[in-house]
Length: 115
Length: 114
Image (cartoon, rainbow over all chains, first blue to last red):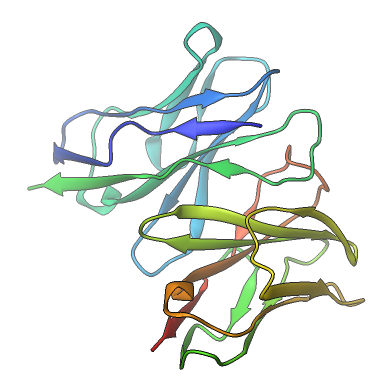
């Protein structure tokens, strides 16, 4: 069974600073990987996804993530954060074999932006 | 707007009661997933339906059940409610049957059991 670990429960970053949120996954084959963002009181919105091909994927709102098979990681990055980026971020893995279990989510990283 | 509609947005009820949460998927999506989000457990997959048929079960309690109707909307039924069932319940839809498709989430139904 697949699993996702987000080692950082909370991260505090100053506005304008760069950001990296860590995600490690466990899956036997090439996974499908996703990053979602959840603003307070809202549902989850897809930021970006990796299925295959270029290991550096671009998403919405200026985010990018890099798939590193050797490290089983899919870290999310942004060069300069804005106060509106404060939210909960979830990494998720899906089964490339088409398993019906939907996505497995990490426990999330709460991003706090300091002025 | 993800195109996934969940009702009600908020629900307060008492222990022992039964509630029904409703989800309308995005137009054209055949798969519906239910997730429970709580502070201690995070996002837990409950159950998935594809075109009216149950396809996968996750950490769903026996007191909970779901179904997907011919018009593809889905309902999650929670019975004999306990305090610990208080959580945010999300519905998500996908065009694909399996785990390779991105999920589109509704805004959730917040259940409070008193």
